Amino acid sequence: MDKQFTFNFKTDISKINIPIKLNNPFELIIPEIAKIATKEFQEFITEESKKWQYNFSVQKGKMFGILVVQQEDGTYSYIGTVSGKLPNNTTSNKFIPSVFDTSVGDFFINKGMTALSEIGNQIKNTHNPSEVTLLKEKRAQKSIALQQRLFENYNFLNLSRKNKNLLEIFKHSSHGNPPVAAGECVAPKLLQYAIEHQLKPIALTEFWWENPIKNKEKEHAVFYPSCKNRCRPILEYMLEDTELFARSTANLKSTTK
Image 1 (cartoon, rainbow, N blue to C red):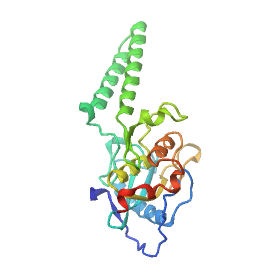
Image 2: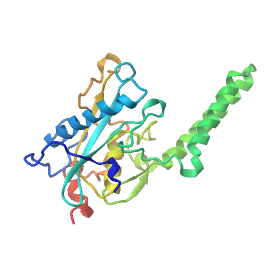
Image 3: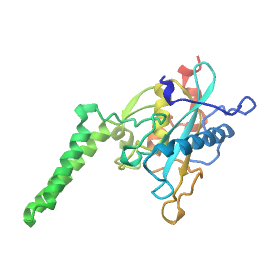
Image 4: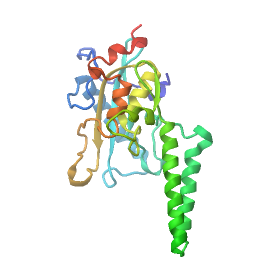
C-alpha cells in the first residue's frame, strides 16, 4: 500500500465505538469515527486549497469524501478524495486518484479529446452548411466511440476481487448505459483503492465543500448520500449487494487474517 494516500488520525479514537459493518452510502447515518475523520480531512482541505489556483468561495464547490479503513495490522486510518477533478489540473498528492489510468491504450483518451477539439475548430472555420453538418456528425460518432472505449477501460473490483468494467456493471442494471462521468464519484474511487490494497472499509461519508450550487441544492460542509444515478450500480457490484452494506466488511476475507 502506498502510504502517501493514508491519513493517520490526529484525534484519539481509542474510546470511539468502531462500526462492525460499513454504513449504507445511500443513507445519512454517519458513524462517529467517520465524523472525526471528515473533520480532520476538512482541515486538511482548508490548508491544502491555499496552494490551488481555485477559489471555492467564488467558483463552484465540489463533493469530497473519506473512507475510514482498518489496516492489516488492525489499526485505523482514512483515505480521502474529490469527486471528478478540480479545474486547471489542480490536485493533491494525498487524494485517491481516478480509477481510470489515462496512459492506457497509448493515451487514447487524450488523443481522442484532441481529435474532437480539432473537429470543433474545423466546424467554427467552415462556412459551408453541408460540410458543417458532416463534421458535426463525424464529431458525434467519434465522441460516442470514445465514450464507449472509456467505459470499457473503467475497471472495478468487487469484494471477491472479480473485475468488471462500467459497461458490464451497468448492462444488467435498470440504468442502462453508464452516464457521463460514471466511476469518477468519491465512493467508487475510495472503495476501489481499499479493495486493491486489502484495507477493510469501516465508514464512508461524502460532503459538499464551499460555494453552493444553484438554489442551495448543496451546502458547505454538509453530508450527502452517494448519488444513485452514477454510483448505485457500481457500489452494488463492488459491495456484492445481497444485503450488501450490512455485511460488506465481513466479506473482505483477505483483511481479516
